[in-house]
Image (tube, rainbow, N blue to C red):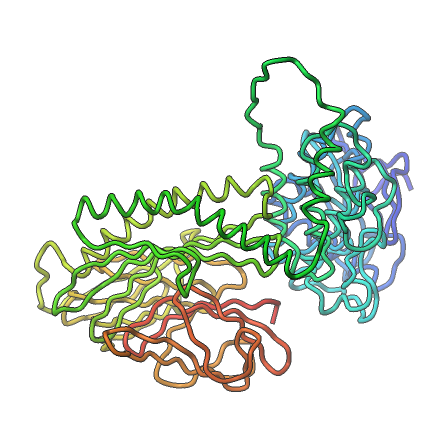
Length: 612
């Protein structure tokens, strides 16, 4: 067979379980044609799925392109497709490429895979043989095992999926219930270790850095920074999938590792190169000599104190600026109930009711040494209805003492200062408006679209006054809704949609544009006053908002046939902007986050831990 689909075929480039690959040329264009080896319904469906997954990810940099194909399983004839002509990763790298070039390649692979995960596509076959160099950049190929929504061929239960030497443990016996994104992280980390060390195969299991055989420095002499890579690989190969970093975090850590270091001038020209790896290994061995819970707790306590000391400085500067400019009370609290550091700004309000702008910094070390540092700003207006609103939220993941830690913390420092000042300005405009708002009726016209500019239908909007009374409720048609209101003074609008995160409008005008954002797992809803259910979970929730003595408001949720935060069913306390883990009797999990509350009205965001 010398020609297929106008492509002239020549030498064989390789073969796999489902096809043979040959060099192909049409005119001046060259490519690699993969031809289906076996003609069966299952084989045709798998071949079709491979091309569909690549086309689904065609806009992602680093995905090997499909130049032409004939893969429709329902049409007669030979099945084939043509890919770009590539070089293997191992062929592109030379003996003198060095560790930096290896990390550059794997940072690019991680970014490509992270973008695929955002589209709910998992590769499931990551190994060095499927990592390539194409058209001047690093590319991921061979999507024969990739999974995505609408896939025709489904692997039967109990069958392992993926490359055996690089396979995550959960993919051996129960791939149907595994999170394949976590498995991709595991396989990429194993591949990085193999290429970095020059070994033929990865060592089995999770990487225990107390043993020298797992450490990159045992195979490389004089390379700086191998300990940071070792920490990342150890975290990414954790036995428990939930303890591995996301693919996005892997890419960020590798990019941070590549960032240039500031050179320090030395008084004399002394070459310590041959000792660097040995010293780093010695320091690492000392730091991780014991694995007891006591040692882990001490490491977390040390991290908390270090971050608290570092972040206290910008908070103090912010406190002084607000007090000097406005003359209002501002306090900094360490180890508050809802976070490890807090800035509280007291905003005077009418009728002897106070309002507070609260900046909370919260540290989550459940997956230590992978750390989640969250900053959020909350408006707490202690009026009659008790309006509490999440104004700003950012989450940063990093490996403790990893290359990306200082970058993420400095970014948070800058963002939280700007966001606090902006939140304070908006709050003053809401609570103490600088101009008189007329009480006559208003016709409000609202447009709602997503981040791409597409108008959204079925968006729920609830218009609520400062006493918690619902003035109107409506849904958009073709992205637009018009509502007549008695006034715009102290009106808050809750906005929610079944496929996007929610938002709150606190200073509406007569013509309003609202933009909703989210990812494939995002959901939001408006509820209050009755039992509700979350899509995909069996069970019900009832949200409660009580005023305690002194204008303090208590938020909690009652659970029916659900457990919250790994506890028993019943009542669970809520904090605005802080997720609650929900699990039903079938083992399905979702994360529910209260976004805002006023009176009996709750605005809720939630996302599923898996595809339900």
